[in-house]
Image (cartoon, rainbow, N blue to C red; front, side, top):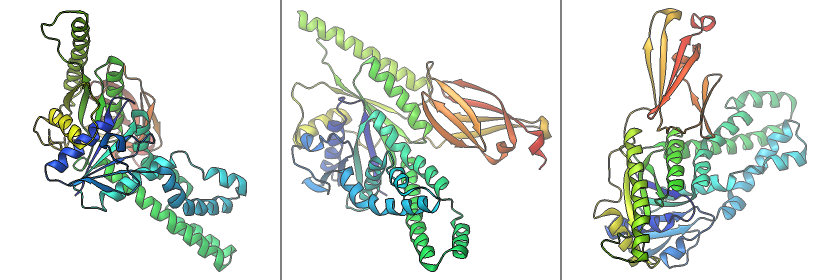
Length: 410
């Protein structure tokens, strides 16, 4: 099973360098590794000191690299599917021009880039695929796309398509039915790809995210929100890397030494706060590593290996605390009949300033955390219940339910 490791962080924090350094260390340890960039602002080739294309190339012994070109993927992979979608929309009575506009879907480039990562993870000799993702906000959108597109696809073209085919056969000729079948098959394959992407991202034994930050309060606050957003999507974060820690001035005197001491004290305070937050929110499996600020920009494999030496201190770059197997959703409580009381526990790391909103949408619970929303399918027991309250603490949400008398006995 290929290991997938995604690096992301606020723009300019050095995630590309750390992703490349991790892949270089894995290759130096004798494990074939592919480092691939999905960031539209490609700088992976600059970090490695070699030109890169869309196809993986070996830049050092056991170290492969590539820069995915989303536009090229759109031109080749999305063209046929857009035609199939236009067929469905036209069949639903949508004008040709409107159908053309509706098939230009936001996020298609990012979704295809993620699909290419999935393909590469199963297509080469490498044991690990290290992904240099875009900035945090773009990455969160990228990682949520498979689920969002799957919902869109299900609403556009439900799984009970055979009913529609039967109706078509009664009112149209064989050519129309065959065209519909081709469209159905294409969308069925897309649904399978989306399911495979979601499975890859939420497989806690195979896929994880590492968040890169500089030790600054604003950046650290964004990192904490990202931890929560990824947990909401069921994606594992196994590490946080604090990059560009300024050196300790020691007993030196002068304005420069005073500046370094002040800056280092601020950074140490941010790191202490991050460690404390991880303990409070139960994110003990998230390893915090630090890397010093370097006078010269690390370019090329030898320089990247120097970075990796400090980053991992001789430890396995893929090692660390084992992933928690605790489920995200836990139902507790009970009772007799409509007097029963239940609690749905949703495990999420939440801060004191977290903005939270809950809403019941049919058989799902819409959870919105700091502006990011996810529909959580309710366990079957709770679908016949009504929400009576909710509480939150550092480790998650506790939503209270009672049976709905109108549904409970059905």
